[in-house]
Amino acid sequence: MSEKTTESSPALAASQASWRCVQSHDREGWLALMAPDVVIEDPVGQAITNPDGRGVRGKEAVAAFYDGNIAVNNLRVTCEETFHSSSPQEVAHILVLRSQFEGGLTSTVRGVFTYRVDDDGLITNMRGYWNMEGMQFGQAPADGE
Image 1 (tube, helix red, strand yellow):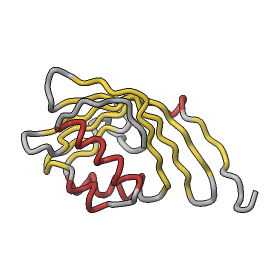
Image 2: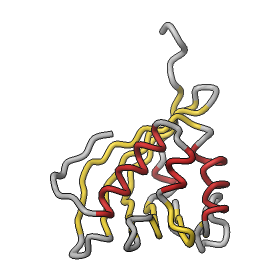
Image 3: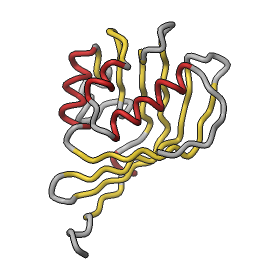
Image 4: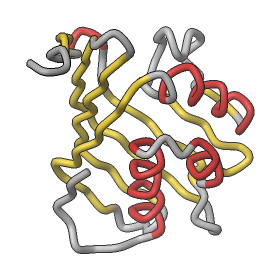
């Protein structure tokens, strides 16, 4: 994980903690960052992870989202740029997500990701603006190559 900001806010802290948990496969830590009424739209709009376009809603659904999407791959997050709002409870980032799945398939996606937190610093909303058409796929080299 890399970042290019020195400012701090509850939203920035929560987003960075989220990336650390994802990269270290800390499911319980990641879920502890979420408010009970959290909504995750990753990506925003209709997608295989969001068939009705309304987002993944509530901690139970978000736990299932983690199990089906995050836990099944080795994910690395690189933050290219951070945009602070006038509210310390909202932040946006340009992120590059690099995934390696079982069997060596890799994917890379670049997008804008926004985070909103409540008064307790828990994530109430995360939105990922990216699309499948922009995703790049590849194959990781075999061990020893």
